[in-house]
Amino acid sequence: MRIARVRRGDGKIFVARVQDGLAVPVAEQRPAFMADALRDLIADGAAIATLEPVAPALPLAEVTLLSPLAAPQKIVCIGLNYADHIRETGLEAPQRPLAFVKTAHTLAGPYEEIVIPEGATGQLDWEAELAVVIGSAARDVSPARALEHVFGYTAANDLSARDAQFADGQWFRGKNFDGFCPLGPWIVTPDELGDPHSLAVGARVNGETVQDGSTKEMIFGVGEIVSYLSRYLTLHPGDVIATGTPHGVGMGRSPQLWLKDGDVVEVEIEGIGTLRNTVRFA
Image (cartoon, rainbow, N blue to C red):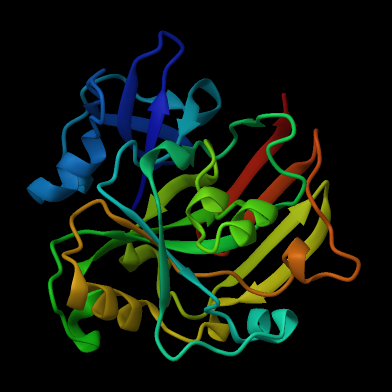
């Protein structure tokens, strides 16, 4: 099953099942601060596959796809989690998952324009990532049981302002500009996606391939990451975990390559789909 958040032409937003090229609305998004209809459905254990439509189905071409989640309680990102990315950076492999946080204001839709203040960064980088969406509360779960707490998977672009990231001694500012976490185009449930550790992960800038990797290169798998994080903090339904990026980021290239005004960044995850975001400096 594929689940998206869509906006109709009249501005109304719905959680929708995606099937046969149609968006089938199953819940309406309330226009309230930090409201998130999909997060609430997941938390309630709703059988989204069998929910009755709340509005007529529409062709995907007639709706705007938004970030599947509007306001997860937390977005946890894992750094340096691909062996090939470790090799290109020359850094040492971490002994445990290296976690940092993005907040909900970084979320952007799969085709949304990312607008960055002029002069805020001169080293804007991309990171194609498989993202995990938590389905049930996880607290101190074992790696063997961790996947039972996964609702589904989506694609993420962990956009990073490298100059800000490394100037501060910690990563918060460089990872948390508005729009620095495009997500989507929808969430794919585990039964449809299959093994999350055998997926192609790639990125293109203006049509040129810059990342061409596989989740086989992950140092810590999804179960290990969920288990590790759950030792220290409760993972709640709707939480997002971005699992790291393969080789090919702009920082690791020679010469280094940074995104500029008008660049189009595409992130593609096998079995999920493609994000396509244009970068604007204004």
